[in-house]
Image 1 (cartoon, rainbow, N blue to C red):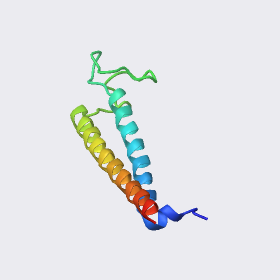
Image 2 (tube, rainbow, N blue to C red; image 1 turned 90 degrees about the vertical axis):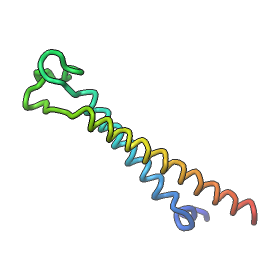
Image 3 (cartoon, rainbow, N blue to C red; image 1 turned 45 degrees about the vertical axis):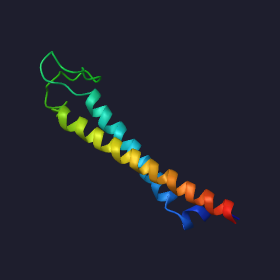
Image 4 (cartoon, rainbow, N blue to C red; image 1 turned 120 degrees about the vertical axis):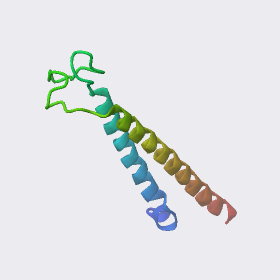
Length: 98
């Protein structure tokens, strides 16, 4: 009876999807940072696949840009989580007041 109700009366469904996308993006950014190398033998982390550090295959990673992207994604995730919480609070209040 209430199946699909929340999606029709609030943005909760789209906010949940945005959280899933944000979590995936954060994992991808964190993965790139973890696999990054600074070139030569003094890399930040050695590639798992055995590719020599600094080679064309591993590709250079701008750690500063990646960390800025991760911070931006974290802010977006937290804001979306708060909006979702408020959406649920509004639904809860509506149900209780009837």
